[in-house]
Image (cartoon, rainbow, N blue to C red; front, side, top):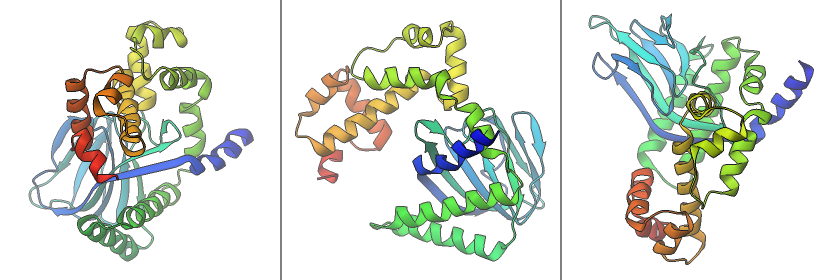
Length: 275
């Protein structure tokens, strides 16, 4: 137990977060959803209204002045009444500690009462302003606000065992070998059978096992890492786009489609923006 706490205390040093959306919404539309499993985490702050949230089959009833974290990959059903719908601030984000997602797909709803509602409201308003305005330091300011509110939710919600749970989910001896193999062979053809063999699992069991731990399928993870490598090569080398596609083991047309799907830009446009 003490060792897990000691390791957990160092985990935030490797924390990386990315915010994809911040907004304030009120009313009935866009809230009622049934059994969705988004690929991103959601942080909500409820200011008024009533309704319910079902996470992995467990029902919660968020109230005004509560923060809640809905982890990526969890089965989510949300409901609010037409008569008294939720007004909610929310942020969509990705977060990892090293190669491991900060919240796992088999986890729960993290929910807490807010000790200083005005501060949380002003923090969200600042994030919304930064998100809309952009600028060279907007991402840093938004990340600072997000990290503070995540800490508030976990601490004020009494989730003192959070880092121990995190360590339980991310034991390196289980998937560390798979992640290292992917890193070392990213430019080669990747076979599910080979990845499953590393952890001595049948491929049919390995795929849900990997998704449970990482929040995405093995091949989606491979594709994401290839796109990260592509962004690096486009930004810091002069290699032609066709050569980069070849280095990643992809046909040029397929590479271009995948890259634009991940970044919203073609490889050439991305290179121009980062030079």
